[in-house]
Length: 159
Figure 1: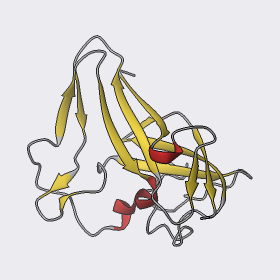
Figure 2: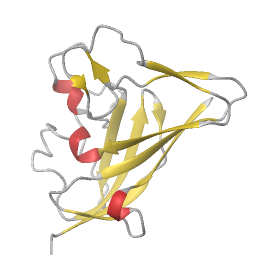
Figure 3: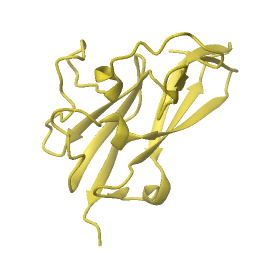
């Protein structure tokens, strides 16, 4: 695989044990790395003619697993059956037309970084209408078919 997707906690939760506050933003740092010897084209569509700038690139999906092993993002739309979700699954749009900047080139050994608002990616999921509650979760992101590493995060009560 010429590209690698690596995630880490971002913002105030960037240090162990990666604690986010319930009801607040859950920012995930997503690094897309070209590990090949050739430039790689990557579709990172994060804008369109109708919506303007989008909250995160269209090809990003998330998988959230409770500490017990339950896949909270399981759904009938994800054809892989693995439980990947994006709020864009339920948007009634095609994200067309293609626009300049939809596809970028990453030179060999270089990276592109995006902050992904996990709370917004999982929005509109039938099981997560109120977001993630206090607890420990394992999160993975996927860019098209490229899966990231797993990241354990904790959601805590506001003080």
